[in-house]
Amino acid sequence: MYVDESGDPGFPPSGLVAAPGGSSERYVRVGAVVHGWKWPQTDRTVAQFKQAHNLEWSDEIRASDIKRGKKAFKNWSPAQRNEFMDNLLDTIGRELSHVSLIGVVIHKHLVDRERKERLSNPSPRSLELLLEAYNSFLQGQPDKCGIVVLDAGETKNDANLRYFQNY
Image (cartoon, rainbow, N blue to C red):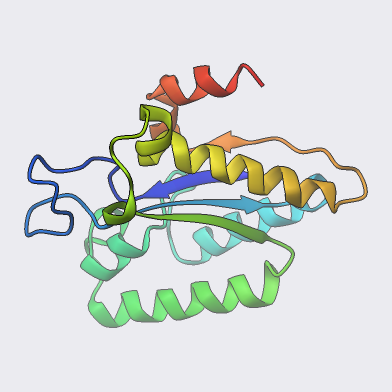
């Protein structure tokens, strides 16, 4: 399972989330699950899609970058970006239907910030909940085994990793 997150895990000093220039209202963590037998096919599909759209293998495909015309999409017109998004969604639906998604959404305004850090900080809490959901997913699989690959940005915050190494 490849894991990535969206949003920031913090709370503004005022406690108000989603205020202009403030903290995001939600923290989202999603895992894309690909069975080991399907990985070569998935890798080829992604590589071919990127190559067909003149992207480098290292170019990250992020909806916010496509929408705003940033990073790999900075020289693309809005029409090109819209067509790319249509092609991306079509490819996912047609060729990557074997990928399962598991997600956790934390609505930060509902978090009890008086609880201990592990339960109130959206970053480790969302990872814990996602790993629990992945474990449940694996229990329904014939081979019941899998690996977790965290986004490179997440590995910089190894406090989460250290906590979960105990299990």
